[in-house]
Image (cartoon, rainbow, N blue to C red; front, side, top):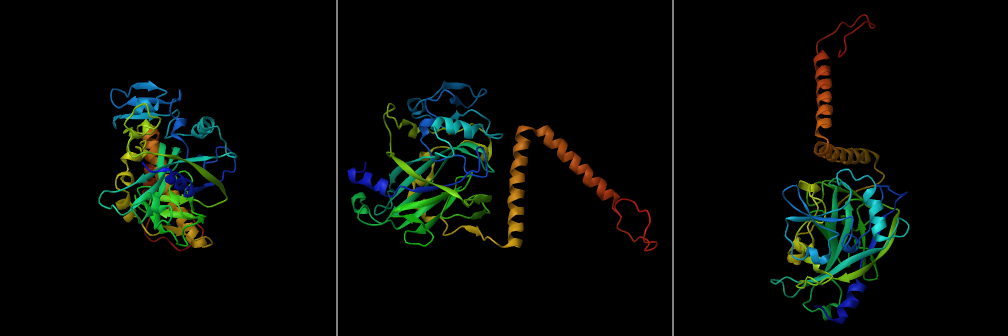
Length: 366
């Protein structure tokens, strides 16, 4: 465990979070949530703990940190609402549970001092963000994101007298790094400024539209462009291990899912202990990209191409969700589209037609 000096360091480097402003309540184009304490879903009578199998029975209503202690991946938390058809219920519940609203947003992040056995001369200071809901192409309950600072020293005390070497921002399955003195990194003193993408919560270095072309970047478009609400973050320190089920942080050992069970990318996420950046933080840092794909503003032709790509990916995601929720309706729609295209193809004539008279009745498809 770090000494008293490390507590000062945690606050000194606590991130500033720039949340994309909402124009009105339930505006999904803006950021509907803020990094918060997991306490909003613990001891909450609207949340249940389920076990996988036999129709996923409810094991506990309003589960506590004690109830989650040491549970395996065969369990998950189920929030009120349906992740694939969220509507506005998750935003309203989040505001109610956290006692905040769009005009009064606060943030809480979890700090962790992490080491890696085969890299004893380095350590990282991590900040983990818990988000109540992920409202992006891969909609799901719960979300764990965050950033970390890499120090080129083995001592926490020494780190308080020096600066980090670099920072890493988590983005979907990968992330992006920047040197501490890089122009790309915006800082308020020693506090990194983070721009979470609206809905997906991937962490970025600036206000822009970012293009994702792979799983590590996120497949689709992330937007952090302003106006944004500037939110400071309170910090809670996480230990590396929790051995007492009565510990208020006993939830850290939960190996299940922080959200309802779904297939593929729509499944609730696992917690910090299951992530590579918890177990091998420096290896994870070394694998980060040096930049992201920023879509330049003001290029009309480029805007059309990018918007088309974003819309197609979003449409594909919506189609997949429809297939999961109402497969019959999707089959009917696709069938109608197929027969419409088939009719048009069969009506199309590729041969020559008389040039005169210029006005004459022609069959459809000519």
